[in-house]
Length: 109
Image (cartoon, rainbow, N blue to C red; front, side, top):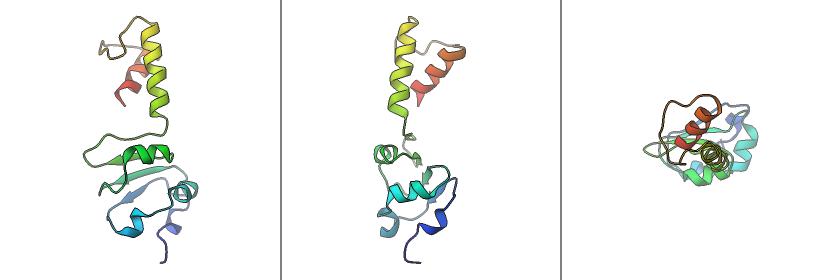
């Protein structure tokens, strides 16, 4: 196999289990384009979470927070909703319901 990308066609998730250079140098745009869902689980911490989110992946790695492509946008919207309802953006007041619960959940991401 000359490239590790062909098996990714229509994949829902890819798991990185090695730090070999072939996997460090993946064309992330091509990988994302081949996959049905852009989800990567990196058990060797080959990639930086922010770079993976920027490439459009939901990215999970060992010992680090998950990264999602829309996390920054969701966080800003969540903060705005909480502030408009009289809560501090870093508030942990529970229970929330409906949209407030979703906003609080987005702040935790």
